[in-house]
Image 1 (cartoon, rainbow, N blue to C red):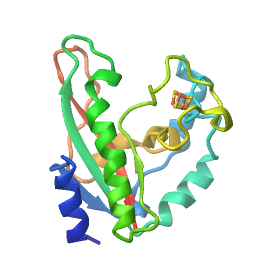
Image 2 (image 1 turned 180 degrees about the vertical axis):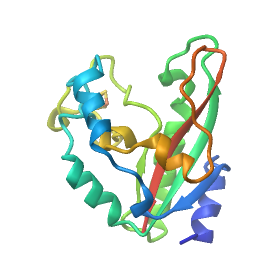
Image 3 (image 1 turned 90 degrees about the vertical axis):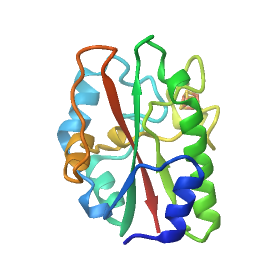
Amino acid sequence: MEKPRVEDRLREYGFDDFRWLSGKDIVVNQWVRFKCQLMCQRYGESAVCPPSLPSIAACREFFAEYESAVVLRKQKTAEHREPDSVLFREIDDNLLALERAVFLDGYYKAMALPMTVCYLCRECTGDRTTCRHKDKARPNPEALGVDVFATVRALGYPVEVLNDYGETMNRYALLLVE
Ligand code: SF4
């Protein structure tokens, strides 16, 4: 499953902390979608979040089509309450550059799912067809029904519900590779 060339690329783009898994080991659950639909105050506002995304069944099928994927970890604190657009801008840019590099290396199914909700516009159009940056906007794993907690814990990675801005966040992106 591991691919040395991809690992070189991961380090080249600043992702030193990663673990491989099979697409079938990415946990996709209906409850994740229900949290979006029933509890998120921004439901319906983002072009790369539900309800603009496929069903949970389709998401599960999508991930299972990948023999290989990589979980990428970054650690941050939000001590000064900076938004993700500040804390993760460089990381997100590097993730898209990594996706492109891996694709050009011949992994034609390469697709990156960031550790943030898209923040590229002050006001999101809320619809994929009218998205202002279709080339850059990607759903995060949760938007596609991924239980990130279960998925990364099975790999031995830590993730907790935090209670204070001074606590360290463990944030996770996915790179699907094949
Ligand atoms: S690029 Fe803009 S319109 Fe597209 S998903 Fe992101 S915030 Fe919404």
